[in-house]
Image 1 (cartoon, rainbow, N blue to C red):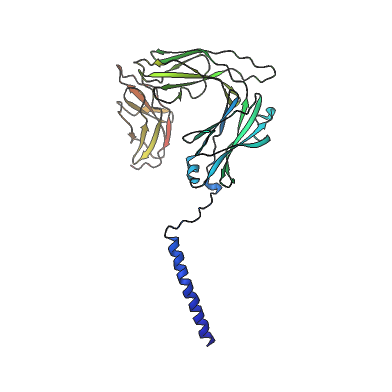
Image 2 (tube, one colour):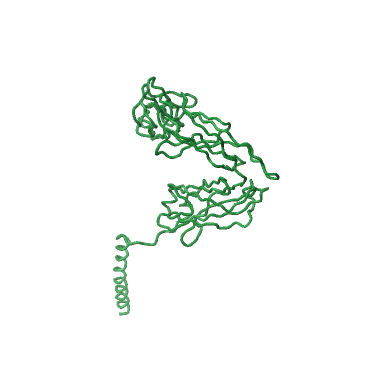
Length: 364
């Protein structure tokens, strides 16, 4: 009798659990929102390109926010916290040495970043609380809405010195091979007791009508003249030249000088495409590029394998892409593209930067 009563009680308990079990199954598959999983350090891509440069009485701090990190934090409130500390001038090149009183000087909301400026995924903040002959170490810490640190960037040390003086007599004039720039640098005297930053160099930029400012040379140039041969025939350009000291690993920028508008000669060869990339497709590597400025007849595609360089196009091709079907599997190739002008003589311009690709997935 007792056994029968126990069995009845057990059946009743199980019968009560069955609806609960099925309710749990239904809720787990019906789109009911659950708490988001916490972001782990393994999910985060750190900011790895924090960099600084010195301007007149200020330090410009710049970093890029990785797209992968933005996706990981899409549903999580976060902020950039700028950490700043002063480095003993004698230890300014020692990244492991301690800093004096590191402080959180600013918290930046990526959506409303002021006083920082955001362009795409690039953030820039200007620190005006600096003094000459001092060194400062900066770092960015990403924190969530509970002010918990999620990741830290690399460190960058800015060494503050007086910037170079502005240029004199900047001039730009057309020549058969492009646009010639000429300027006169002003000699600077190093204050007594301060470190000499060395000889000034120059950052060169240009822009055409409605175009953005772009670098003419990847690195600062020396001297007082420069020939810009990467211009488009017949287009008008402005030029901007900024004197700069390259002191150890810090750029110290002076005030830029801007030239009056100058028109490139009509017979100059067209500039190369500014952006070239390669995509593997079935049986080939496909070369893509952004068209060059100005009037262009077509493009030539070049391939480099080891030290051997060949031109793949017998005649200029009108538009991208170009498919290279002569590649072999598991070989590293590099590609570059030049533009051909439509003026008399069909002159070919300079090559673009080389882009490397390994043909891993080529199936003939």
